[in-house]
Image (cartoon, rainbow, N blue to C red; front, side, top):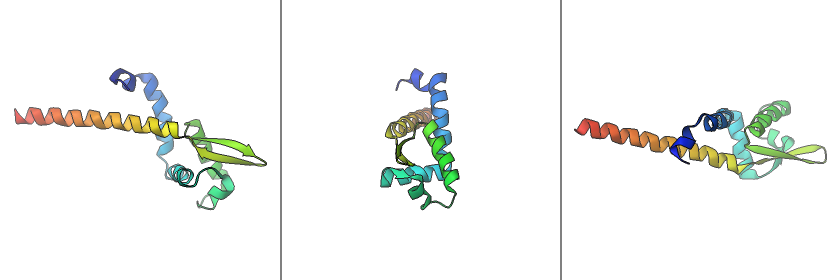
Length: 114
């Protein structure tokens, strides 16, 4: 990811819902569960969380809008699974920020040592 691409308004608009979705403890827990257990129904997921199935569905919909999960129908249930590409995108953004922070610290160190 180039510096211009990473900082473009379009890329930032793409990243904002991703990080907003990751910023909720329940949604983060859902991702961890799907990552460790594989595809699960809301019924199976609700056994792991102390919120209603309706609330879990709303959280899963937010994750789906951010591209972090996808669902498919199996009979009367929706089966949810992790969409790893978006986690790769989040990792790339965080790596970019980390490099920028390291560069800023290096510049500060060089300035102080002069």
